[in-house]
Amino acid sequence: MKSILLLEDDKALCNGIAFALKDMGYPVLCCYSLAEARRALMETPIVLSILDVNLPDGSGFDLCREIRKDTAMPIIFLTANDLETDIITGLEIGGDDYITKPFSLMVLRAKVGALLRRNYGKQKQIIQIDDFTFNFDTMEFQQAGTPIELSKTEQKLLKLLVENKGKTLTRDYMIDFVWSDSGEFIDENALSVAINRLRNKIGDVSPGKYIKTVYGIGYTWAK
Image (cartoon, rainbow, N blue to C red; front, side, top):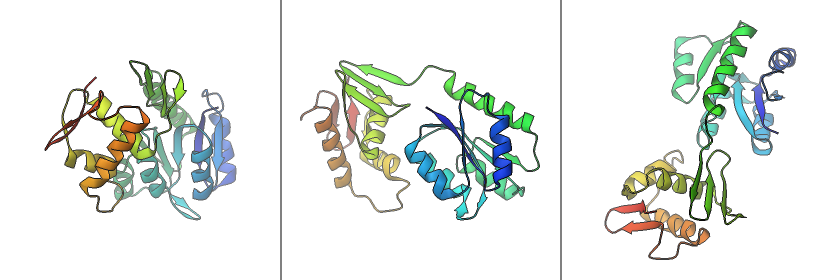
């Protein structure tokens, strides 16, 4: 079942917040360290994260950056760090809201509810193309009901191409979009290899019914 992740090293406070949010429609999963939160994110579907900043084993800012590499789930910072620079940092790295301690549980509930309505009260992002079903909310992909296993890089490429159907995307733009967070130099051959793997997994053999090569420029999703 999908849950709200609450990262707070004060166990009494964490339990109190969890109790206050118990009727928001999702169970609240309390984590008391970055390690616990990272494990929860790998093992449990999370709809919204509430992150403290100062943790025994690191910073909630770092976890936010990691989450933002893979998902646009709502993130609220809930922390004693009330400096303007901290607030700006939290919002610039991907936080949707920043609440400083001490805080009102009623205000927190209202903000959690608003973010859940905004992000999950709308139609899910499921795209149907021929016998393909691409669910970019859950990152689940099928062809004629058979699951297609895609790596994170292939998921990013597929989403980028499908959402820009009919547009020619340059190789440089695609490399920057997919690998910008890696901090490593990525050459054009890496993109070619990733495109070929994606084509093979969706059965789109060369020259490609769906992913078209625009020679000298890049690629486009043609269907």
